[in-house]
Length: 587
Image (cartoon, rainbow, N blue to C red):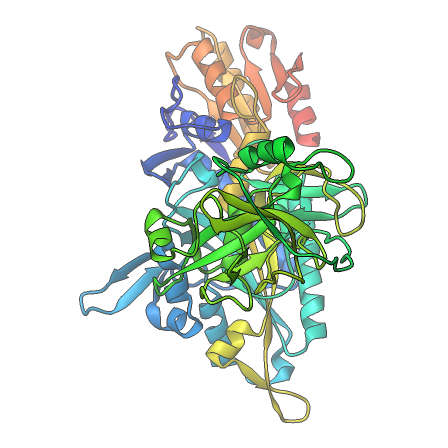
């Protein structure tokens, strides 16, 4: 097929859009692939739709190869299924809700677990119908508080979501592996580097969860790698706890610590006024920092929780969000402290001279959770819950306990992975996610089938998502130079971009001949036949659009010669027109 630029719906921009933060956003807008409609919402132009269709086709082919079948649900969904699973409330402000003229509640679906589950429940009732994997490619909607980076974090985006249905755990393992393998093939065909990392399931629920991350400095996810091969999203990283220590004799000692509301001022005071610990001077690692957080639950109730972490660490916001989901996590406010006078700001600790303030035997009613490094027998310097007073030699398991352990402290380069080797931290962008949902949604919605013995069993499910529009943006981010985009051949909007330049008719006539031959050979051609457009503008647009193979018909047209231009390598070669067609069709 031949598309003529003279009649194509296309207009390039010479200036970057004012709100563009990353190259993909800048170039996709300038090259007329997308246009902004509102923050995080974009219209798709013909060029963009062609690339998007190429990505979707690769996804469809590999889904079919993995045994999945395509369906399609509406984006507008009723409240009731999401109410049954609790997610109508759990999503909080993160979704678009609306009412119809009769007052019934609807949402623009952020995901479709409920719809898939109910469809299978409606049609299938026997183990003989399973295993089953079905998928759709559909637009999703999330009310992002801060949409950014063009297509990388939008309010409307296209996803492929697949769901597997089995009646045994062994069947779920097989379905999960088939989808995981399909994802690897998809990303390999798209030419994308990826790392598979252990992930937190978050609001989706379920057990096993892995993310496919594309390593990139602009990624909003941090992940860890170890020399031993361990990989995990930072939210799912498992801290290696030290061995428990013998419980020492003695008692905690309260001491005056004027003007020491921060860890650094406390450490400075310790090194001036207290005998140095064995092995050297006092450090932040000897202290126990007690961070007060407010959890806002989906029903809007507010709960305070105190997290005890080594003083050389902070609480990582993303790790805390994952640990306490679906509650939202906020710092405690002055009003929170006013309502809880037992917490003396700047001098908080789990114990005071009057007894336990936090932990299992306390009377404050505030949950106290500690970092995995706070093990039995470990000794700490921490607040005494009195203004300008701390205490030392406070021992976990002797003087204080906790209501549980929570792994939310910041992760650092060199921390030890569960495989016993040190980690490095890297940035990545999520491009795919696979979950073993288990029976959460099937139980909530009553999806059961009869097994071989005629007994009703609850179906177990897997969920598998790929961000189609995010992948497109990631490919654009990875494939560009200072002039414009350079698409991989697998997703390029056209196979060849033919550019006719020159004042006479020779170039245009030869261009028509070449284009006809390319079309006859089965190639998809973009032909820049625009009259009265300068060669500089045509070449600038060609570089911006990013078709990797260019054929220029210009000064050599009278002699039947054209120039082949490889946009990726920059190589140019003048060849006879007949040879050029043969060369391009052979690639």
